Image (cartoon, rainbow, N blue to C red; front, side, top):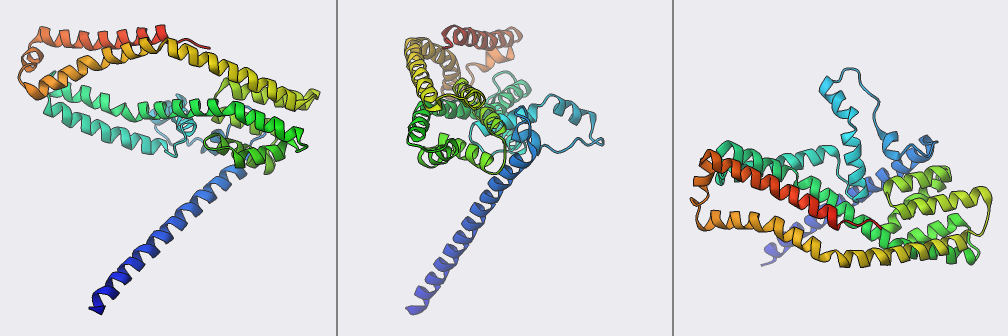
Length: 324
């Protein structure tokens, strides 16, 4: 009776020790990566136009193929890396490519299983559609994170203003803001403070903040701080007024979003309804749409229907998108 208990205890002990060791190594590597990034920013970036991602890019290799040079000239990997960073994801372009290929394979298998447009065409179309899912996920995550940052920003400015009125310096106020503010904006201000604390110029640190958080409000904040540094003035009062302006604009944006909710819902329903109807027919009656897909004129009709759906959804989105 005692031996099974001892064996279970040893197994549980080994599992706990392995989990603790792996967790410790993970957080240690994450901390080292963060410190290394801050040190490279503080040591290498001397102009506000250069971002952290540019500093970490490897020098060009003359032995690369013409296709590799063409892709890098398009700056696709750099722009994708910037979008993933703005989305708060720790992905790399390689990981993104692997996810896209896996989704493409799944879509190709679905096209083979449901050959609506023919075996080869269905597999290609479904593969391309599913391959774009990681990109849309990054864009959606980025939009949600930027909206959250924009919502938190007025409170952060008021916190800075109150801290400076209490007698704290601007850098100390940034440190307090990074510790007290919830995520994701707290992380950005902690990075801003760490960069400046490790020797980066204020202009460089604020430029990096604008690159990580591409919001108009953040650019207003950076311009206000740099202008006050050059000309003087009451920075606490400036930040308070800026917070009021941002909050008022945010309220107006909410009203516009509520007014255009009907149009956005209509666009979503009109886009999803034909796709849902097609999959429902494929499940209920698999041979119902295959006759149309095998006919040459039917294939053209299906292609025109898909293009019409995309064009219609694009124009509806353009109509209901109101910039504030």
